Length: 200
Image: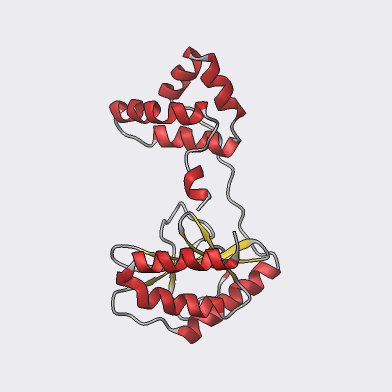
């Protein structure tokens, strides 16, 4: 996808999140004033350096978020960053902007420049590899169908984990079985659970 196509997608994202449009526009302007490249991943604006994600923007119901993918390494002198999922997120940090709050352009630029320098020097926390745990419902379905088993085993380890976690994260058996019904055709088609978002 070309830069102009990404620009259109980000424009559309900002239009869709009109509650945060002024903050998104201001933050985007700052990030685009650096050596970062604007792109779109998982449907939202992302900013990369040398092909690696450095920052991202997202509009939520109660706040707008500026994400730094290796934000744990930022000095954060202004104490803007927080770990949105303590105990789960290791490197990712978020700067939350509340309704009516203005983007501190100078400060954001200093964080972005520091993040770029960290990326250049190779500072990163690599995600921990999780062991594949196949839930009982999926295991039974794979045992029952040779075709499904072959198709599942042909998927990448990451896609296998996504499917396994999708089923096991449901608390009730009824929901787990319902999810299994929905994903079976996707597995048989050889596609991942989140492929449609990754191609945005």
